[in-house]
Length: 420
Image: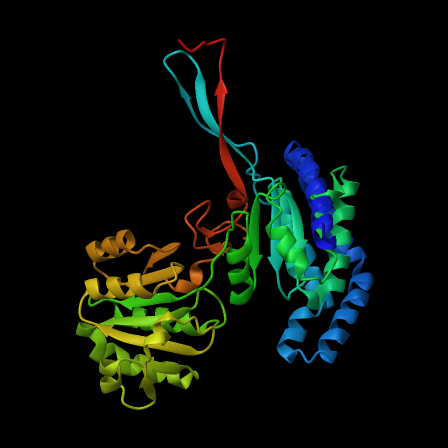
């Protein structure tokens, strides 16, 4: 047995024991632990920043970009935001133990469903050390034990943060092993975690495409994830064009490097001549590179480069937009079916029937009418916080909040009934 496997056996066994205890705990106790975690992060600010300084020095020595180093940095404001985020999670409604759908059977039994924690969650993530606190808080609030595996570039910061979180659990008389950190940079530890199906119930990867692809390929455990965010905005022939311009610009340019940014703009041929020239000028003025089909380039001959077939299948995560003019709603739907990553799509239209058809026909985690793709987000949907966005259909789809970290089991209340 390798060192990585031995370590995961130990962490897994401890997490499984802690998960049982945490699942049986009260919401009050879990909230008390979360508030203690938040206070601990603030009280240990100096220790966190000392640990962070080691990561920053290593990052500079290893030639990480200025942007990546900035993402690693634990400033006073970042630590305060981490603590505030944990407190916000404590204030969210508790999903654990909710009983619904209690229905009487002819024999007098009551059959219903209870919401319960998933058990042990493994989270594999990169870069930002604040994910350690955010992810752990969501897991504890939902009654789950968590095993955290952060990126090697933040090993010292993550270790220090995880220690604060475990201390917060202990101060509330909850098992400190409910939050455990894989304290090694050995990549074999990731492989061992992905094969720990005896102990771990769900894996959630948060990071780049390479990380998520590895998790998909190697995991023996069900995975909650999305791989790409190839999101579409479709401007229908019955669109309010002023609204369409604002929604397109917001969807693409409000923040370009995120998974719910618009990557492809589809425009109905009936409105393309009126819509595309001013839309393209505005995007170009904002620094957006435009890659268009032949019809788009006829209408906007200046500055629009030919779109390549692979552009429609690329998540640019940058100020780059692919554009296609379509003859019909059916053609728009066919394009989305062929190229979407099943993340987020929106239609801009004033026609109720076409809007409803779009909602029914498009198979994505969030389908919208007259709204920016940027709204596919747990906070924006009223979940309060999220672990990420899932494009899977099992077990959760869309933003993964507290409810997404639980599942339902059937419960039966009887009075001595026997099956005949």
